[in-house]
Amino acid sequence: MSFLSICTTETIKSAALALKNRHLVAFPTETVYGLGADAEDAHAVARIYEVKGRPADHPLIVHIASLDAMGQWAQDISEYAITLARDFWPGPMTLVLKRSDLAKDFITGGQETVGLRVPAHPIALALIKEFSAVGGKGVAAPSANRFGAVSPTTAKAVEEELAPYLLESDLILNGGPSLIGLESTIIDCTGPAPMILRLGAITPLMIEESTGLVALESNPNATRVSGSLDSHYSPKAKVLLDVIAESGDGLIAPDQIPTPNGVIRLSAPSSIEQYARELYLALRKADQLGLGVVVVVQPGGEGLAAAIRDRLGRSAFVE
Ligand code: TXA
Ligand code: MG
Image (cartoon, rainbow, N blue to C red; front, top):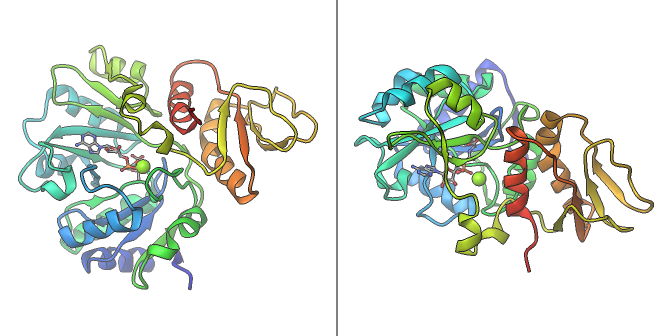
């Protein structure tokens, strides 16, 4: 059976009802596809963890329709957090705030903070709004991939990855490919200044220009230390960074880099935006082709390029 559903006003309405009836709905956002559940419903949220195969102490982002819903899920919100929300929502940014009573342990992984995001995708926003219309307050959604795997940027990728774990009443809304292709920037707003927990399309410079505060960055190598590095953003193929590709390898590299003989070119982006948009699809393609090795030539520069290098560093093979 297929879980894929094209998006009309009617399907979005029935998807909102499905959420209210404790089912899972995967939906497009501008970053990557999310696997959604009613953020107030412990049973539905537990199913997200089951389907993803994700450890239960990892917190989930609650997706809301507008900044006005921030106060339902969070409290003691700092002025700079509101400034960020005004400047970049809807958009590829998640704010970590002190939780309200509404954000239960099953959402926050037992932490006193909650992650909130207003996605900039018409289908995601329509779904969240329809969900509010039937009494919902927020849609909990991690990226719609199995734990440790590459985030999906198309509905087809969600289906290929999660169909074996979904139930008949679950849905996947098809909204075409995600325009950004990389997960949201996560900013911890509980301290005196913004602290970036995950790099993304909202860059440190944009955060500083918006708030007038210097954005700190949490140690990007933290996962390396905890030893979980090799299990994140990883395809089955071995990812090798900035080496010469050999015959039979896959290659992801900026378009000015030629493809050596016998190498399978997976992506040749001509801009940093295209690099981000195609990266996960190219890594998936490597697995579909059954490649053993994918060589990735990393992009230079700051901003989105730094976010790409952050993901690649985690997906790369370490001995
Ligand atoms: O772009 C995105 O953020 C996508 C789309 C679907 O919105 N979602 C996404 O969710 O990437 P996920 O669960 O795959 O990654 C969210 C990350 C996790 O690493 C989680 O630990 C972190 O956000 N996170 C969520 N709530 C947090 C909190 N309260 N404190 C610290 N980290 C949090
Ligand atoms: Mg994820």
